[in-house]
Each structure stands twice: as structure tokens, then as C-alpha cells.
Length: 198
Image (tube, rainbow, N blue to C red; front, side, top):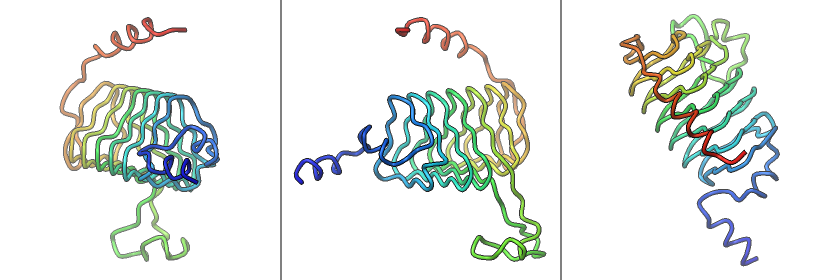
């Protein structure tokens, strides 16, 4: 009993606790806060070297796939009524939300998930894909049917509702392309892997 109490007082889940949660797949070196909320872990795949901080929400009505070297900062939320994919070296700053479903705001449909979908005919839904080396700044929102292409950065307080070009910087509400992002990090990635044990 004392051992169990001690384990639950730790800030992050222990590896055996994560295995017991029933994730679809689980890599190595995973750090997940006990204060985050995980719904339907059987639909969530997590790669290696992933950290999920306090008060994050992973709601997997459909599949969530997190690659390797992923960070979800505090209060980030992934609402997967359609598929969400975050590829290697991608990350979310605090208070970022990914919505794969959105109600119609025109008044032509009823709204919110307590209402059957036949009364919400204009429901807007689709997957969100964040490709390798993408990053999203604090308080940003990603809407359904969006692909953030490789190497792209989304500035803080941005609303992303369209696909983003690779190796670009987007900012604003709605987000607009403001420039190109440097690719120096690719050299650092190569150096990083060359220094690691096989």
C-alpha cells in the first residue's frame, strides 16, 4: 500500500503504469503527466522520446499517432474525431488546440456533441497532419482538414484553417505565410543521430 501511494505521488506515470493503460502502441522513454486526460488509449500510438505535460487532453474517438521526439506542452489538447498525426520532432506549445471537428456557426444547424449528427448537417470534420519538424506556438488553434507541411512553424495566437507550405512561417488569425523557415535544423538532426548509440 505504501509503495502504491508513493508511485501515485510521482508527477509522471511509471513505464509499467503506461503499459497497463492499453495504448495501441508504446515506444521507449515516454514521460506523461498524471495530470493529463487520456480518452481511448487503445486508439493512441506513441513513439519514442515523447513528453506530455500537465493538463493536456488526448481525446481519441479516432486514431492519434505521435511519432518520435514529440512534446505536448501544458494545456495542449488533441480532439481526434478524425485522425491526428504528429510526425517526428514536432511539438505544441502551451494552450494549443487541434480540432478535427467543428460545428457550423451560421445558425443553419444545431450545435455541440450532445446533439445527434443528423441535426448537425453542416458539421465540418477531417484529419490534422503535422509533418516532421513542425512546431505550433502558444494559444494557437488548428482546425479540421489541415496539413502542416514539413519544417513549418506556426506563430503564437494563430488560427490555422488551411494547409501550410513546407519550410514556412505562418502567423495571424487567420494564419498567413510570412516567410521562409531555415533548414539548419536538418544538419543538427543528422549530427544528433550520428552521436547516438545504434
